[in-house]
Length: 450
Image (cartoon, rainbow, N blue to C red; front, side):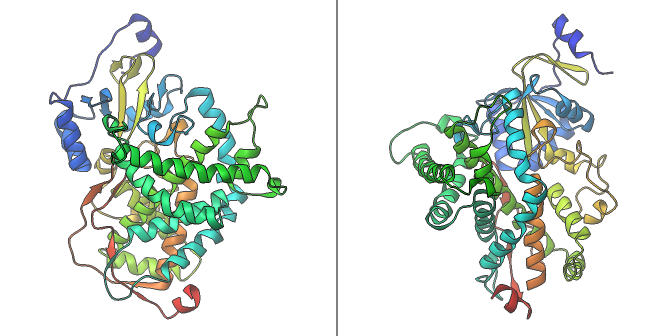
């Protein structure tokens, strides 16, 4: 029976789940080397909740039970914070959605969320398709190539144009420098000990130089948007942020706008591109499913394609876990966690648990055909609760459209090679070989791709 949280807080009773007694650095090495396998092994050993000591973060409780996850996701935002500070704060800035807490997080989310709904979302579709086709024109035929970088270029170009209205010189500069900043920032984010300026050759100094240049470009875009006489008719997120105001009439500061833009650019293209690379890696090893998807793509139906995207994110979640930080004694199941404890929700364990999914190791999109949506406490690639990813709808739409273009314009060669292993980029888990594939153009591709 769960303990009454308020009563427990008043009485000061504290209790913790069983502890993984190895040093924190041992857990960190296991997680970096093989996040899925290590978290699954520790779940088998310690159960659905256990305590670890994490380097640079402190005491943490890893949870893998939907009932416990529900408690975490339903907690008020003054009880559980996103990180305080979140590991990405030093990379993406204090104005990033990842760094904001309580009322400020709620207010800023209200400002941004309309740009990812309704007519705004529909207006992005043509841009995404155009960028996918532009990149696919140069795909080699008959020889294997890694898809991760091409998908990175597609998703970055799409979000620059659709969400930020970037064109011309701004577009070119961000396409050149942002991927390098994101890749380096992703590697450095979990390593706060390296966030120091040790001279021009140090990784952190290189990152700051790249990020500062991106901020300069974004700042020019903000200034130009503010001076645009047609600003009120623009549909991009940048225009929305420049015009919007909080309930009390105040506006976001220029730096906060830049932090939010950088967050959406960085988080919005790497994760989607990584999922697409995993999608190609999986489909070429499942020829029957691939044939069904090709047949569906010839029409306007998307039911199987969307189920496949849901299943892909179940078996290959890009972000293996997400964090919350306890701000006041918090009852979790039969335990009471003290202030300052980190809660780690293991997405990988939730997705691989046979109690949640039959035959969890199988890549089987049919499991989602009969469901309108996955259960929010058992399927968490976008996090959940008040901090569920604000760009989820955009990402799902982008994956659907890009996958449809591939299926319509290319024949994917079936592979008998072993599945690609996982490579940890620091934040995102990607195919170690970049999602390699061999394709051939279909006759109809000449007209569509040019």
